[in-house]
Every structure is written in C-alpha cells, then in structure tokens.
Amino acid sequence: MSAAVLIPTNALPHRTPLELIVLARRGINEARGTQAHAQSYATAHLAALRAAAAVLAVRARPAPINNRRRITSVWVLLTMVAPEFGEWAAYFSAGAAKRSAAESGIAVVTAAEADSLILRAARFVDIVQRTLDL
Image (cartoon, rainbow, N blue to C red; front, side, top):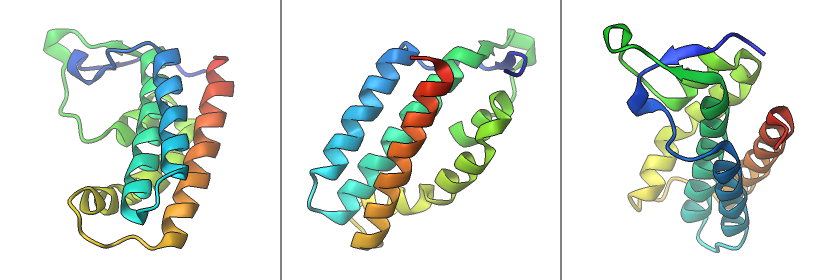
C-alpha cells in the first residue's frame, strides 16, 4: 500500500468504504437489470466511481487548508492514492464523457458497450473489495 496522499477534504467521500462498496454492488445489479443501454452504461460507470471512492476513503487523507490542489477527477485521485489501479482509472476515465452524454439522453452507447462496461465495472468492484479486505 502506498503512503497516504493528501487531497482536499471536499474530495473525500462522506460514506464508509463498506457503504460505498455496497452501493457499487447495487449499481451493478441495477445496470444488469436495465433495458436501456445508455442507462445501464451510466449506472455501471457510477458503480465504478463508488468503488474508486472506497479506495479514496481508505487511502487518502485530508489536506491542510494551505495544501489544497485543484482536483480534476476521481480517476486522477485514484492513480495518486493507488497507482496499481492506474489501468482501471484510465479505462473508466475514457468512458466518462460517454457516461455524461448517456445521462443527458444522447444515444451514444451500444448494447455491446453497455454490456462490456457492466462486466468491467463488476470486476473492478470485486478487485477493490478484495484489495480493501471488505
């Protein structure tokens, strides 16, 4: 495990790691049961975000007020606090714009893309849960 990385307090999750994993698992199950491809894609992506937040909850520490930096995304923070998740962060970061478009009702997601994201998000949640011993 890497040393605790300092990040702004407002970027830290306000739930416990276990709560975040439970929410992530619910999201995966919801994504699997959703017929609309865009909605299932967005829901699976949100589940992955919650799993990443669980890692932040365990590994990151609040930064002193004079040490705050501008935050770009949870995926950037994830690579800072847990470099071993760098490939996952890159994958999910690349899908963030598509998730945003899908949430806005823009038809940008195919059934195959949604299914693939659900599978990868579920795998990511599993790995995070094992890594954090939850």
